[in-house]
Image (cartoon, rainbow, N blue to C red; front, side):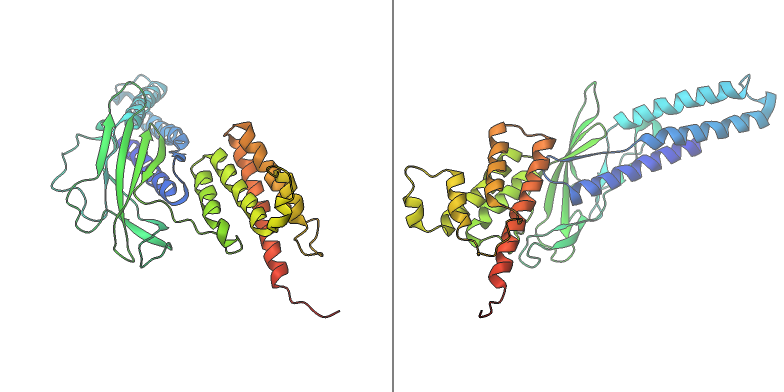
Length: 329
């Protein structure tokens, strides 16, 4: 039994660390990962089968009338302990200046997981030396004088904890980056960070619209799809106003519609600009549809991703045509 218990603890500990690393490296604000536990049942099943074989070999010297009874008893005990393990509070130690002093001595597996060693992560660093490049960050930081911040709530449902995880760039050793992570049972959600992720805007996006484009990406990364669609539509609309001659816009009575602006903009494109290339008129219309739907769901997020790719494709094509050499006819 002790071997199976150890395997369960080690398996869950590895998955928690891997999940935390995935969350901090690949997810954005208010996105989540769920710690997988499917294989726990397989570990228990294997341990029970091994125990039943041992009971058969021991014969009548055991306290069980038969191996099946022994296996059933062990299975119930292990499942009960796993339930307790998943509901227990989790503690973490940092690589740099970990928990000050001696930790309280645990009374064993039934009391929960041992303290988990936080992983190093590779994330963007916006300190002056690193300039937004992705750098390895150690957990903790030089000069850390206290343990990691954790707020735990005792309730009748899944375990609820909020962690404050500090990381320091291994390259510049500058100001620590603090992540705020919420645990709700097996689900970990990134709910805050002391510095927003550096968002690099593609070079083909016009300079005047780069701030709107950056805001669109940040909104999309934090699952505010309506705001993302509105910002990206602003990129398109403001590009229309910047590109179309003011006299042509003023010739339209009242406030020009998106379609009217798009038609005027189309006249400014190179004569040999293929009609099969992504259209900003369609992108503007599709973005308006997302905004007017008032829905933030998987479908609207998927639509936004496709529209953003089309907008990128259009600006790439425009830049390509501008850079193409011209030859006398």
